[in-house]
Length: 361
Ligand SMILES: [Mn+2]
Image 1: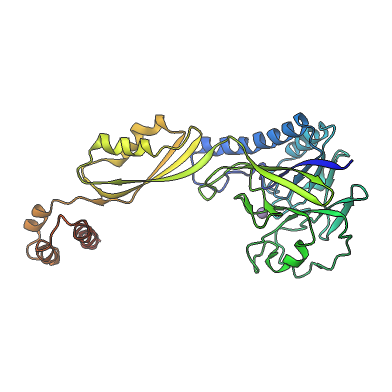
Image 2: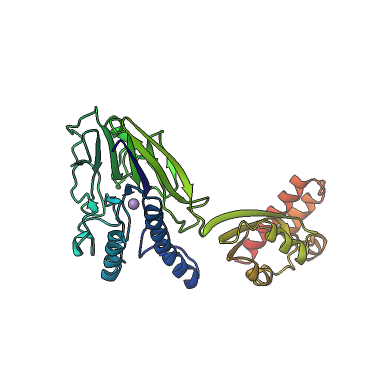
């Protein structure tokens, strides 16, 4: 053959997805299911499109949460692929010596697991080799790894590895200082960083196929591509799934219940979106954010509101009540300023907030 197609994914975190986020149990359950759905989708695409190789660059599951039945389900799902050869390079969450890991079940013949902490070559034919590396434990500083590897640079070489290309001193296999080594490959299918990113035209983090926290904003998916003699072509493909997004709504003191609601609704991004909305600006202190939040629950897949507004104080009343103390002193000097000027107004509110907080301590 002179042409192969592939999918590249990583960081599915089967069994553990969403475990670390503060979200209602139902949403976390949904995220865990979502990672299995993403896995099923990838396998389905491989079958449907007759993909030659599925590259999984580590953290496929979480070794401390995965169950035996899950591993068996994975193995039998992958066995159902007639054409696709699956290459797995274990990472820090699915290391070979994890609590429960790859060694615990039998894998079908079409699944190749890079089970050793050395650069291992699988020769596909006389012009293509696929290389991989597997983590033994859940940390790897890289000092004990040799990058002195004998390889045929006339071949097309593809690499699968789970590691951190953005840092030189990460406990997660820092690769930043090994660019010369990576340079020898025609494509590096990387895992570990959940956001899809092309470090260069050929060092690619596919990212996790599913977002699992507010750190993972923006679209998520996988990389699809093809390998020819001397060249690898690839592009990112988004999967339509739960997304995490953050928005901001700036309020003014005249905004009432309905305006605040409208503002939040207009910051809603998509149907399957876990939204975090930050309220900024100045808000009427009589508005009950909890109440507004409850009234919006039906409009969102999940909504989190962070109230970062400054209350719109009744300055005259506060002055009357505090003439003899530091608050009164502060107000007297502020009232000489032009309070229609937004900068002065903000200074008034911030100062008041600080003083009032101090008083209530
Ligand atoms: Mn990782």
